[in-house]
Image (cartoon, rainbow, N blue to C red; front, side, top):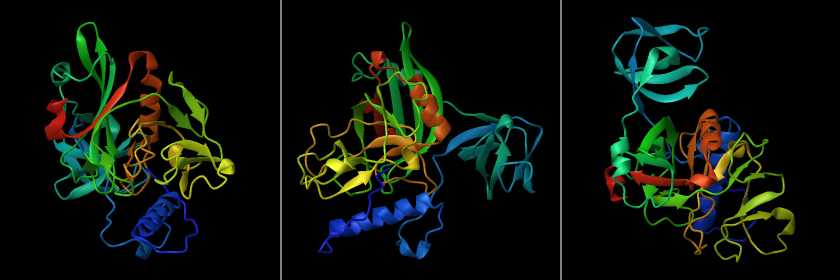
Amino acid sequence: MKALQLRSYTYWSDRMKKRILKATLALSIFTGGLININLIPSSIQTVEAATIKGTVTATTLNIRSGPSTNYRVIATIKKGTTVSITSSKTGWYKITVGTKTGWVSSKYIRKSTSRIASSTVNNMKTLGTSKQLIIVTADNESTRNVVIETFEKYDSGWKKRNTFAGVIGKNGMISSKHEGDYETPEGKYTITTAFGRQVNPGTKLPYRKITADDVWVDDSNSTLYNTWQSASKNNGRWNSAEKMNISLYDYGFVINYNVSRTPGKGSAIFFHIAGSSGYTAGCTATSKTSVISILKWLDPAKKPIIIQTPFNKVTNY
């Protein structure tokens, strides 16, 4: 998620307005929504994480108003009922079934894992020598909700490992991204660098510890556009950059998008911890637990890649 910081400018350009909006969104996330929502345009709506289907395994399952048994029961559902899982929190799923929305114990929900079959991945022609693959799929280009699936290649072929719920840019996905469009870039990208404010959670990727001085340059006019820099060494070399020392970046990795650093094509595209807004400004995000799980799995020796695409374009790869 790009969370730009407000800076002083002498003019109010469209670009500046976009930056102010991004800062406002970031503040909303960081304060848990305590910022006055009237500051955010009505066109922005918060949504839950990506939908994954699940099936009730208990004879009768209570739906509660919050993620623990301390919350009241608001409805019950029976064994075999199909539900939509929209988010999770420490042993609980937030689900929707019919007109009901609430929390259920994850012990009694069997998640569907058949969004993309291993056979589909085995038929892909663009994976090269990679042996680790993350596929991020959205139902269409405009949705903010995605399903994140991981695959690994063995002697017998590609096998699915895990499925996670996630979110992407406020305006969905796009194949021709540009700076400030709130879109997540479609395409296939390498993964070579992990980062975080905390200690290495166990990833084999090169891991860079974030400090309070770290920023990512998003000034298209700077020669350091789309690079990780130290704010204290700016010396006029860029006019805007986003701070890296934020809770959403406790753990994550860089999606190697726009590595040629083409001005205006987009910058700071990461895979990181999701905030409370239900979308990002161009990155891909999921729960903290899921980010850590993926980081521990990633291995540079297996040349991991990530594909981000609308579901109907999966076979293009």
